[in-house]
Length: 115
View 1 (cartoon, rainbow, N blue to C red):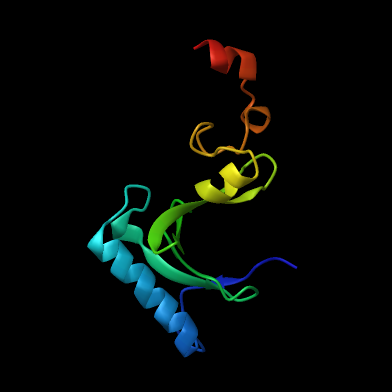
View 2: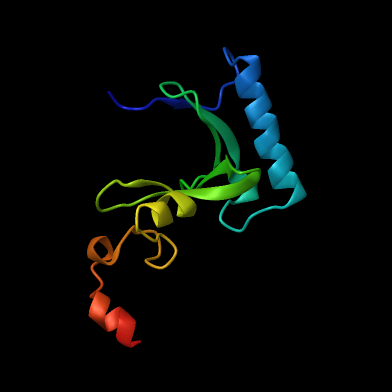
């Protein structure tokens, strides 16, 4: 089953509305570069109940330990998570520019280490 996302607040519960408020407050206190404010929406995954910010380029922001952080999705293997999630799993979205690993990015790790 594919995930259904919506930005329509109809049917959202208090928990989800509080999560949306927390995201918007975090963004207004300290805007992040990875989200385009001019196309920003608050969304919910109808299957998981997770609330997140998104822009028209599919960049996603979530709360992690009280901070707004980027949520990644590797375009090669579909591994998903934040940078902290990736580090825990010995992956690195930031190092490989949105891919989770050298293998997924097509980079040769030996060449990367030589640079």
